[in-house]
Length: 67
Image 1 (cartoon, helix red, strand yellow):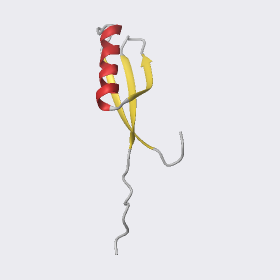
Image 2: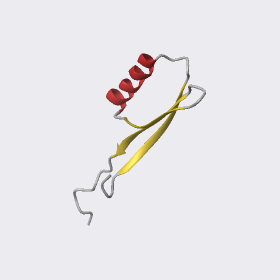
Image 3: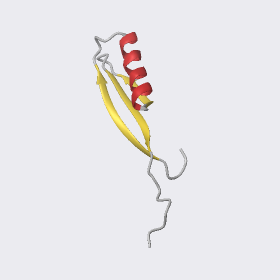
Image 4: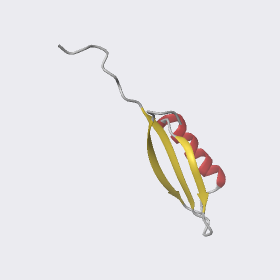
């Protein structure tokens, strides 16, 4: 990661009863419509998927100098 980039993180916990296809579709929706990208996916011994997604925080810089 480059210096100065800020990230927003979101934790998701997905049930073990969701199919792989349903999980994939949910992550695709987050990526396409929310700008999120997959940071980490862990599957626990109980089958629960713990997903961390992230997206860049874009800060606007002032373009005009205030007098």
